[in-house]
Length: 497
Image 1: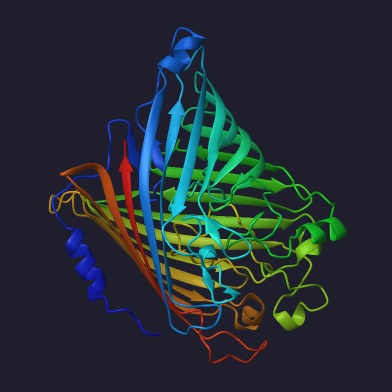
Image 2: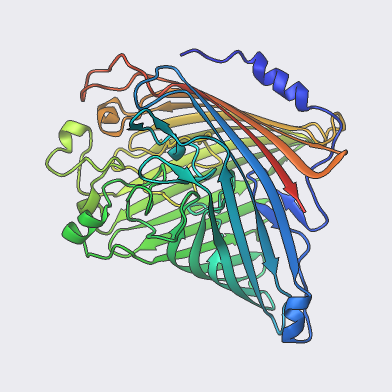
């Protein structure tokens, strides 16, 4: 492919590398994934009236630009760009006898023309989703919704939230890297009464993906109106669910998570996700930090994920593409086409010394079924997954290396932080004709920068280049047309007020 000259990345880094400080306001910190952490929230009040008069409003403005440079253009895939400008207003009440509430409105306006090409519909927006509302006819428009609206109760070391909220775990994520967060309608309780242990239980009813106006099914696949994210299972359509399964297009999810740090330097995590009539997923993870002298630490980690079929296989098949059945499984590289039993084993090493962090990770997906994870939490996240990649297809082997350097923490360039990673994804060639995924190499870099002259403002540049093998034209024959290789650029500005 036509790899971009890496001097462009270096030039962008130097352009942004001026004296600055990390993006923090007096009441918030923006994490590397652009989720907001509230460091100052309203406290206890003496009356219902004071709940509202003593509440706080948190504002955010943001601009997000995307550019795509494809190796081989076609009538449906062409070089394109898009730009959205928007923001959010979040209001938090004070807490009266432990009761409080939060409401957040998020919106974005497209600053470009509709994604149509002549009389054809290209819908580039499903790649740059969330800078605007993508309609099924290829046109776009402004969007806005109350992505957050929940009641909260605090009592000692227990916390209960009921309503529209962000949920973050190994399989679910708020994922606020673009304009509007991915949120859920749910009831979630968390308790920390057991020493060094956090336990959480959630009953989740629906989800609103980032470029959607309304909340919808957690699992049903339908473009523009239901779960159409990149990790969605395309075989789990409403028609298939009703004809081949239990008929529940809107199943509820049970989420259980636990974290324990009782043993010094050892962090243990467990998670369970269950959708009755579809599948259940259990995850166990352990990370142990080892001190190497006075400066370096080495943290080996391991994660195991097990997906257990409970009907999803017969409904949609073993592949996320939705085209594998019991009848054609062998010709498409799957052992059992009507079962989604599967697993992933992951391992990593993380070495850190002050401002520098280095890591290497590996993941191996069992040769059974693709892993179903359409809730913006990535099964291989933190181990191998790179930006915009789905690397949990059956019998895929991935390895990745990553380096992060905080120039501000090092006392060199205040406010500058750079992260770069490389991933090699080795897909099963026998499945490539089914999934359209092919072997690929990905290089990705993020640059964050803030400026003292612009308080509460952060600039972020992202670049990725994907060098993918050509797609397969049959189950065994690799083609010559490559529409999977591309360069991608993103530039975002965030301002907190």
